[in-house]
Image (cartoon, rainbow, N blue to C red; front, side, top):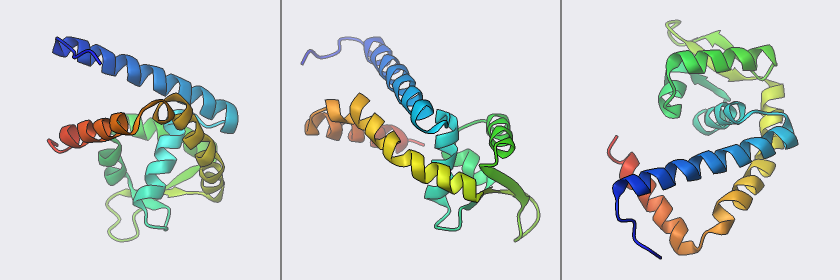
Length: 147
């Protein structure tokens, strides 16, 4: 394997990889489930963060996803119109909203998850050696650890 001589080359390689994999996975996801990649990312984050209740504060979801509040708000609006989520006033303190998965949202996520994993395997993880996967995980941990 040739070592990258310039940080710019590494950055460009990362961007190409991200764009390529995201585009392929998004196409597969849309075709298999009718969900957009942002739909799936929101559903997945709510499921992962909600410990079985399928409900999470909008602020926590925004922070987890790393999206601007306005972007998440627009995405949630689209998902509400399709019946995947609702936004409800927080029962604990009433100062914010909770994102709640509907039955339809839970079902859509459960049906899409296996196809999503297969797509990620087909377009990324299945193409890499165990050493490359370890390196990728290590890179993410280094970068995320700075936050």
